[in-house]
Length: 126
Image (spheres, rainbow, N blue to C red):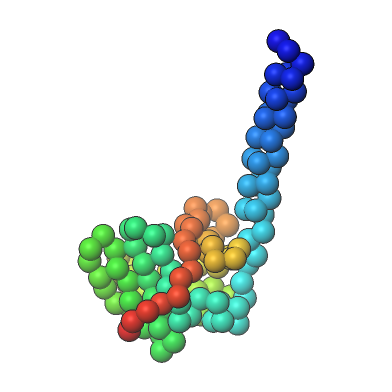
């Protein structure tokens, strides 16, 4: 093996380690939002995973959602520092912590539960 090939392999391996480390660092930049930050950053905007579902939290407390070709309406409110949504699958509000990093949002009901990730988008329409 030539010295230049060895340097290339070492440089490539180092780049992969740095790249994987930087993606972990980006994940750490999620910050939990309080009630006023939820209202300022989430309300009036769309929340979506892209191709599968989307939600729009209207400023009047109405929730409009679409998933897999069907749509439904519900309501939302902020309780403490959690965003609470009425969902068709439940008679009770589902309340979630809201974390953000740039336009990326992460929600979870409790620390021991799985998170779901989405993107905040500018809403156009109703």
